[in-house]
Length: 277
Image (cartoon, rainbow, N blue to C red; front, side, top):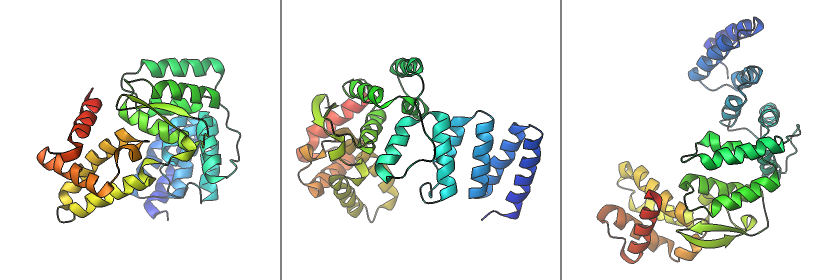
């Protein structure tokens, strides 16, 4: 639902856009969204971002929509934004996960630009979300090969490693990949794993933590952050390290509260050292 204030701002934005003043029009619509959610405003703002060559801003905005795949207008705009950003990898993920056909053909950038993207990414000591999502502009063979090289790089950022594995899962790839888990080379097949938060072991451990902190809710967010670091470091090989999720959750709680991880003390210390390196 679009409020009266939002409609007034939308009207002002349309007048500014008609004069070619995209900056003012965008400012009006961004202010309108701060008032409250509105699909109409989102679609208009995405349109303006694209006209103003702010393709990535349009992508960030549309990805916040909860009904990305259920609202036909939102989905069509999402498809167009993927095309404008050349996010061919994400387009393949959408097709694999949802079986929906995107209205637009989303093509990767040229081979030359793909090489530049990979070289630039390798040079980043602390890649950002934006840096990582530039990899969606690669074609599938380059993305797979580059992903494999990154997963065997001991200096790879913890968060990048995690999202990279999950993107390989979303692509539904059936070939074997190698990955470093706590410095040890492991193998996995993306199609046969799951997203970390959907993994049965992860869910059981988090449930166990939730039970233990039921009467201490203020501490729960910080504890869950630590849990995500620990389980994310072991992903996608959780089953190799966690044979009893409830006991593992208890050991995590003890480690956080008393620095005593019991039977998993050495594992937790190794994870901490690995993340801090």
